[in-house]
Image (cartoon, rainbow, N blue to C red; front, top):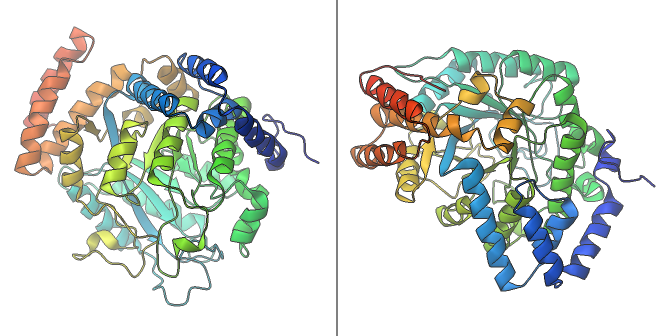
Length: 473
């Protein structure tokens, strides 16, 4: 039987089934131990994170007063590390050809009634122009796994195309990549292409269920998939993003596995995940979420987000348009730092007037435009940020983490958020959004700690109003 070892490079040792079961038993045994829960919360207040076992106790806790403390602490930690900024991005679906048989995804190979589509480079360019016209600066590209239709060369060509398009004042300044587990050599190629974060969702950390849910195709190999982040980092990619698809297995099992993965990356590479995503199984063509009996309530979903924020305070958290505006509003407060806006989850969807559904990966629950999402965030007191400066200034991997853990990253992020918001307001915003944004920027300049930085930002805001673009700290 495999022994638990966070420093091991073997999937079954760093995500150890027995260790997770013991963790869940420990959490059940101690979920009413208020003295222990207070000790865990005190440790969490040091802002250095929690072990998967300690965090699992918090997740299992049912005491209303303690849950409120968990939520308040998550909110405070979010403010300490990320301020009131929310980073904006959009997914770009390149191809839904896929050779895998994943039971929860409409792209699965046996689905004969979904329209299969792969963008040509001309179509990629058109999608990018459409996204730039909305105001996006950061994309996450997505493609099914198909060595014939979507080889690594195709992905690299698409990245090159995306970075080359400069339309009016638009530019995609960071391309994150969400594609299937691959080789160290291919990760090197992605690094050389200038990608931002490499993102791969585990889907489920429960090996037996993973193999049942992925009956056919290369993704069936649990170990190869689970060890992908180690190969990516070996290939020179500094920033990796992990996540599970909540609803495929018991949420407490997934929560423990997710945190063990973060601990493993920290133990082996000295730097944890750059982002953690928390998607839930959603309705889609040929997929009924009710078939998965592990769905979780909105309330538990928010509690999971709060406990992740406390356990890995330095990691960005992502929520997609899978969730309704109401859920997004709740969960942003508890720790989410990145959201998508104006998303279309179909291949070629941004060029269509009407939102197409025939090639969608999942139903979108938040159908608002990017302008409407930006407007909503500002009304709620958040600064929508289109900043990509850290990646372009080389503040990635352990360099980013050390700045984040020390709280110094705020000195760059806050002014950068205001300057990129100003660009959005000048180039893409509706009249109402522009008005709210102008007031917000004026108010938020006063929250910049250093007078010198404040003066530089004021100068640059004037330059942006006069047509200059792309300033950053």
